[in-house]
Image 1 (tube, rainbow, N blue to C red):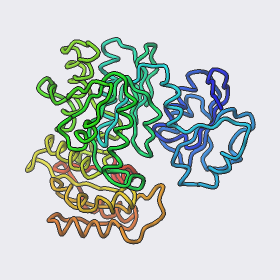
Image 2 (cartoon, rainbow, N blue to C red):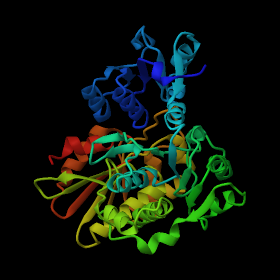
Image 3 (spheres, one colour):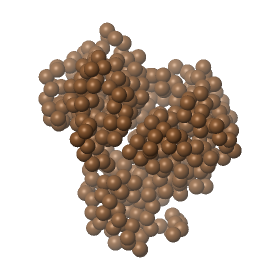
Image 4 (cartoon, one colour):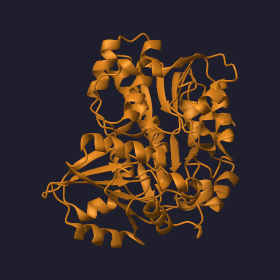
Length: 436
């Protein structure tokens, strides 16, 4: 059934607190539509949407869908979280239904879409691109998988044809997009609860490359990227490594951020934006919510960070970036990590055991299993043992309260940096233990 958004007055969002789907809710609010929604829990994103006028119910029920709803937008996670609820939604005939990825394709359909894809670095790269386009008067629209510090929002609404979106490969959802420019930051094994193997992942990136009209910005020397480039595409390939020597001194640390900045310089060159203007914007870029975010400092002088890293490569990159800021001998780094998904922890177990090398203290919370059934064959305790066997001391906690009590007893002070990591709720421990 065709969908004309101009004719829709009331949109209901299932899983409205998700960082991607909430941007579509913001967009609908900006178009003066009635926006209602439901989510399993409260939080910053839900609070901000409520302030903007969305009517949100906590808890999940078919009865929460208002009778005058014309369109339901759902998070794809609902299919796994509550399949019966999803089936019930799909069975009704009167209301139009679209997934978040389908809506992303719909709102960008007639735009000059710049899709930022890759296993790591999507969010920061998207935010960097947003900043340089805004700073240079390109007036873009942007959807990013975090909150931009300038606006505390995951959405920018611009008047130009430029639309920058974070393009996720999970379940091949990015295939709903038809980019003019495709960024591939990198390709690694991830989402192995959906993909069979790295070849399957590469096939998805090959499909999105096939749908790209003008340019593919990537690192052709990367093995997986090189594999997909064996096929010829209509889009021209641009190597972002050629721009590494033009990256200015950044406010955000880490080799990975310098690579992200090189992507932005390559993109800016395509769009004929002056290099000096891009360098100025990049040097002023201060990061995004939950991406190596400095949350504050305690009265005892402990510096508190939070980071969304939940893949071994991301953890390693973030900790090494933190060590750039706080060299060995100056500060001790204590990390509290919550693994995300049984399937990811199991598939990448050996990599997880070796990615915390620069940390002084490593603590683990129970696995955040999200969309999965419990798997007794894997646990944070087993990962802690593997980390210890790999030469680093690690300790796992059976619940959040145990972690909070233990960390309080550490009496961290001015020589310490404490960082919570993961896609789950590790940051709540810092909220409970520290005042900052």
